[in-house]
Image (cartoon, rainbow, N blue to C red; front, top):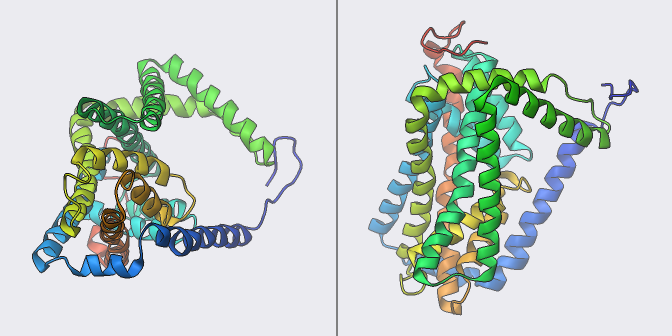
Length: 361
């Protein structure tokens, strides 16, 4: 590998990077689950709280969790014309399982998704566009939710300075992101300028770590503009509804878990749950551990425990662990099964891009 000056630089071994990343992730997870969460609530009390749930409550939670899993499949179908719901389910569950279990799992999961899409006849350009558009829509919703939550809290008269600061920061990021995306879609010239500007910024950052400079981001931004306009022309509404449903169904899993372990509305209202959910989602998005393991649990528990007594805090920690078991742990075996299904279901495999897809290679 050569850097921008022509000097050879091979970079640190990928194996070493993975070992270091895995060690850091393990240390963070251990510190949170062994050193921090027990200070919020005793694990024995948490387990007793979980065991108090009735079979009906457990079944309802499982049903809501399955609905949440399925909701994202419709997002994938919306951003990739020609993809079936079954294929979306297989690709999503397999990539999620990898992202939840391996250091750097997000990139590895994307690689598995591309391998699956390729076997089904979708080219790299279609894969890239679908990944970018779904990611943009997900981030729009993630940034918008704290703003909405703040507005609801303001109506309820329960806004703290910390929440206000965080929501204003989220609003600024959302406005910036929407503005940049809108400018890219507005004209080829603007798309090229923005792409080149982002390319220069990326090259500057890569030069610091002696990585090769990036090129032709202006042309890539123009291609992205053309493809995304064609895709979103008829699909933006379905994509928006599917993305909102996916995020709100995840919030619903948390809310149902809280109510079923005994956290009453008087202790933590649904609006406060929404606010905690929105802000914790932003924090846990940082790629510190696979799937935000540990970081997410601590973020949810800390945000929900503000101003409650020890008994309610125990119920909150129990609900958070149940919530994460349903949304983080259960997808892992489902993802393994999905991967095996992909390997054996050769009737889905094709050699060329489906005619129904307007996106080329």
